[in-house]
Image (cartoon, rainbow, N blue to C red; front, side, top):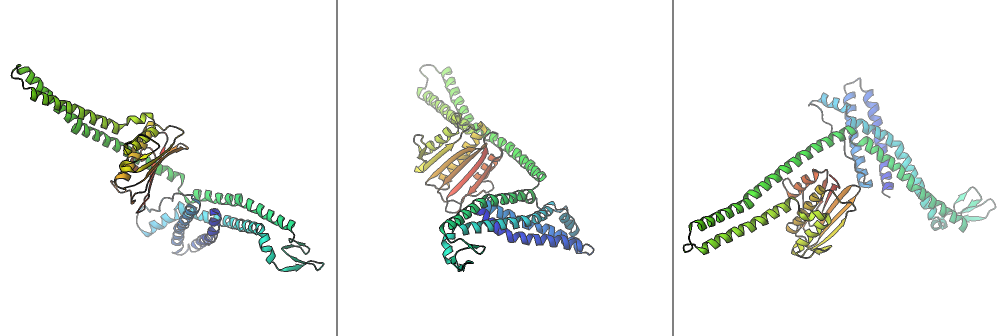
Length: 432
């Protein structure tokens, strides 16, 4: 039905676009002897991009086929003549004109097939309903008949003949679907080939994206090393220094004091302080190691996410457990193939960050985490019923997640209207 609607909407647009191109290609060269011809042709070529924009929007909204726009028109320098020269050389404009020319006969064919097959099919299927309202006709012998006629003596007014009409209508409806689907599929190919970016532009954009991804990965690694160095310097290292000083003082006291002058209470307090520093340093080192690579990931991403949900609940690990503060957490994992270690680590930390945001900032009462692996990709979805309003602000936590997933050629999508619910989807390759 979406393809039928797309066909009906595109038919008048195809006529308008065809007229536009014919006028552009005939008026521009015809006025080339004047000063207005070439600028007019350049302007109409650039204007053809607008038809391409409308066509891509229709394909995206009605067919779900999203095609990236071509590179914008950017003259090398300012000036009218520079713009005119850039317009005449605009490959996207010329390709849009070709699309509008080819689209016209395709739209006519698709419209005729759609209207003819659908109307005739629906008419045949519903023929017994409206047959009784047809006017009375007479055959060559003068006998009255109420029904559709073929010739002068063949009327569809008996039940066997009406059943044949219904069967014919059903066959037409059955054939309409593949025919319409095939014609719309041909239009999809034309949109991708003529209204989208060229292979050279896609390669250039891909190269630029890889350069940004590499720079982001280098910056992320450098930031992680600085964080580890800072945590070691301010945490475990300070604890170990304090422990060494306490043990040094105890050793000096034991070396210089005799049995009567030894202050056992002071010695015991310094040993206790050193022991406390050791335990705190071990805890900080354990947390630091968990922040680099959680040991639970050795058992797989599903076990790690179950542990994450259980720690948030403060209860035993189950498929559905209570979140921090009593929020129920529904966890669903479907991974026929185990991802690589780097992908598991990124997916785990993203899930942990989103879980924390939902509880802390979104004040969610229910959280759902889903992980599905299909066609070489991993799809992580976190949905909560919190206050909503999550956005990709510069310097925000979600922006950091975007940079993290981009390092492995992934993407992040946020749907969070005010008042909720919030749905965040992360797509990653299974192997990186």
